[in-house]
Length: 103
Image 1 (tube, helix red, strand yellow):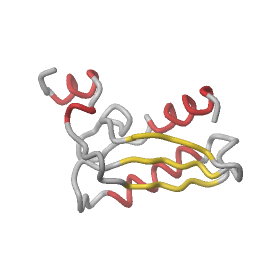
Image 2: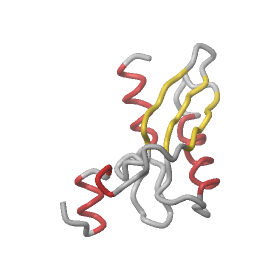
Image 3: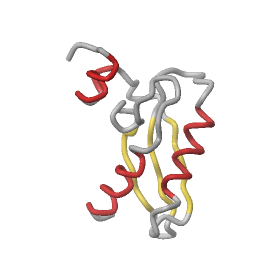
């Protein structure tokens, strides 16, 4: 995958807001990576802030919705992983400031 497409996909994912925290999933550090296969399936590897997150389905649907606007992405697969585990250290400076977390 070329860098421009990766940046486009990550940029689109910045429009997916975690409903509980009000910050996008990229700045929260929930997205571990994006890829696209030869058939145009966008693959998003990500985690959630906690196992059993009641909004997991909502976030997954939003991920699929925002990537539909990218012409190269024909469909999207979301891989939720738990390793490495998410921590506040993965958050961007912006997210930490917005949530009042010391840097």
